[in-house]
Length: 262
Ligand code: ADP
Ligand code: MG
Image (cartoon, rainbow, N blue to C red; front, side):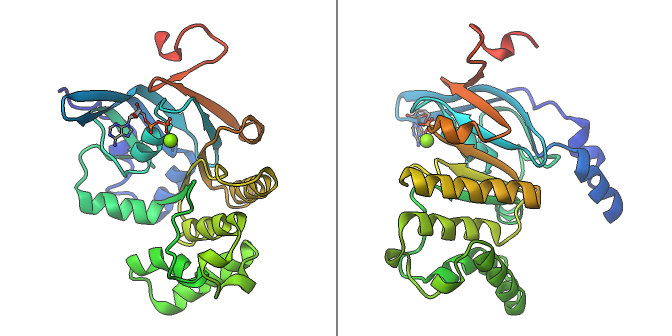
């Protein structure tokens, strides 16, 4: 397999720059740059090409919706983008850093510090109350208690959850549980929020409220958001919609994949 192309963005910026230069360069460099990413799942003799050459750039501060039929590769795309899963070929620069061959320990650190995740099924810990659920990622970071407390109180207030902080997930509605999951994703101040059908288990009124929150977070905090959804009405509220079919990004208006014309 040939090594991934080495883009200047991945190497020129980081090592020797001062903090100021780092901040300045961050302003312009894209959040996500994927080039021809392929991902294959192997189960025994069966191979499934979940991503068949994805090339995409997502700018800082963008709100991107992802649509596509079931099995088209949407979750696989988020898993690769979120460093939860590896890929077989192509290149991926996350925040200017080539993640292809990073050791696991460094990948987990990037995941914890730069990324936030929201899932369809909320994935809260049933035994922990709202406050302690939100505390989990901060404890992983070994953040000092006063700083954790300050951050948790801020996201609780921001999402209107302060009065519910001693409730356990089972005492909350689906919409409230998803707000807790958003709070947990945001508490570490990620740069990129990845959401896999975050409104899939909600009624349409609660879904719109979750979308309102995501829009607010995107515009107020300039947070980059990538959200998979089946809901065309919600997707239309994003800055841009990426359509995925058979592991490729397609232009639904064109008869051919975008990659046909480099
Ligand atoms: P979507 O989220 O769009 O429904 P996925 O990314 O979950 O699609 O799946 C893309 C393809 O990869 C499907 O054909 C699916 O069956 C396959 N796939 C996903 N996860 C696995 C896995 N862990 N093992 C084997 N095949 C998988
Ligand atoms: Mg999926």
